[in-house]
Amino acid sequence: MKKVINNLLKKLQKKLVYIVVAVVAVVVIIIIVLLVRSFAGGGAKRFAVVETKKGSFKIELYADKAPGTVANFKELVSKGFYNGLKFHRYATGFVIQGGDPEGNGTGGFCVAKEEYEKNKDKYPDSDFRKWNEILVKTKDGKRESKYCRQINREVEGGLKHETGSVAMARGNQPDSASSQFYIVLDAAKATHLNGDYAVFGKVVEGMDVVNSLQRDDVMEKVRLE
Image (cartoon, rainbow, N blue to C red; front, side, top):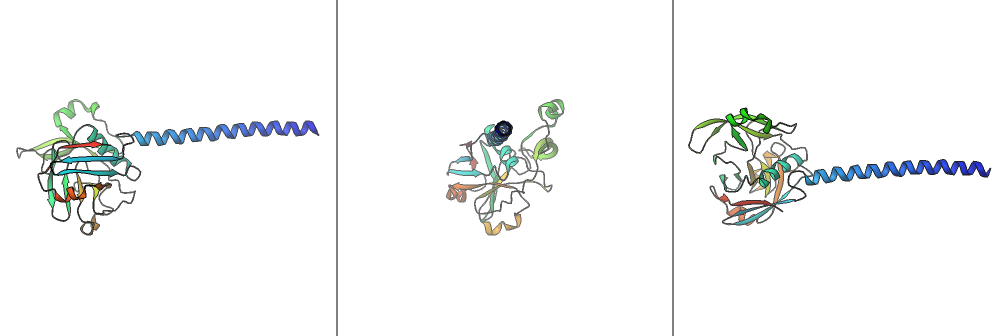
């Protein structure tokens, strides 16, 4: 009887070891996945600070609700893409919009057509973002075909347009956002945008600065923290 009990205990110990190893493996995988998500596109930094001559304001980034959109924004910030760009659109009591190198609402994160066609390997597509040819109005008023990186509309997180919300501007096509973003000045005037435009953050400090901004004010520097 004693031998039977000992054999059962040994078998039970082996099973417990397998269970513990399996649990540890699952925990390690979960930690790795969380770390990868955390450090994608700008690391664990959850905020972006926009500096202007009228003051600074801080945007909290909702990577858990709009991971692809936040990663795209963080990458552009890390490249210094937004530094020196102006807010080209101001709609009183509605939104203020910026992030277009052309300064007129037609551009985005783009490269010349010749450059793209010559070096396509440098501009890979993914499931979330693709390089598409679009017609851009340049600063000198000319129309020019460029290849711009555009991202999928990401509204599955259910984020609503509130006062201070930051969302991606886009063209007529749902998946045409690139680099331009807007800040909501009054939620009551932006409810029709819910579920149609991708919110990815919100101004949590300096909303008074945002409210003072006008068309042609410049983002002198945008940084992550």
